[in-house]
Image (cartoon, rainbow, N blue to C red):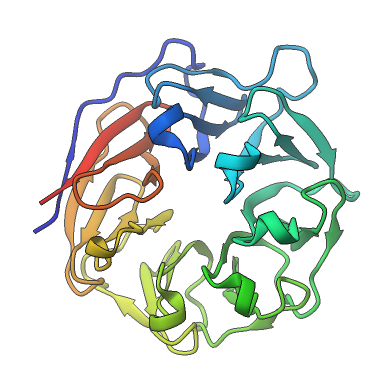
Length: 327
């Protein structure tokens, strides 16, 4: 049986009080570099010791201390050291593991980036997509240098979540969660179509896709008012998961990538993380948000996470809870 164990967080004195975390991500090389990035109201923050201490990712006065709202690592981070962060009207890019950053301006009027996703085939195609709150999806095919809106068929321009299929190099499948529902693309985000996601259950706040999506077609969608939903046929049919238990907004969904943890799902709610060990059929509380930290912002499984490996829980005030998935 799998269980989640966690220690008590310690808030770093370097982070401003009341500074809300919008997004949190760990390096694909976390075991070696301990790198975490936290997108916050005060800007982008960086930790190189697994979340124990934090500092601004850019130097004061360099023009990049703007509110940030999204983070994405290159799938080839071990080789290219590339990481992105999104804010208001810009996408920031670092080519040296987050030490130096360059701002790339998005098309006017300046959109607010809500989410970022790099193609799983980024090393070959250089594709990056940004979801925005009012301007739909922006697409870059030159590693973030230039951007164009890519909204053909996207009927709702308020994009809150993006996810790419693991077999993107073959099927170019992407999904976008919006204020009103769920849209799919089968050509790398060049065009979109509305999926038969149930009416009147949006906004879709979070998406997650099975590591074995090509075989099982499993897609997860977390909503603001209608709990957690699961599809086992690439988004054609949907079933609400345990409506009696998961009633709060689902802000995030975390899936371990290791084969032995294939049935494990974490649903991130404002005040707790819920865990299922059987693919969503039953649920239990994995972690209650510690008092005084503003709730849970995100859960990150370092690359290759499985049974017995470390996970990190980012709290809304920037503190980090360390945990493990134990037998």
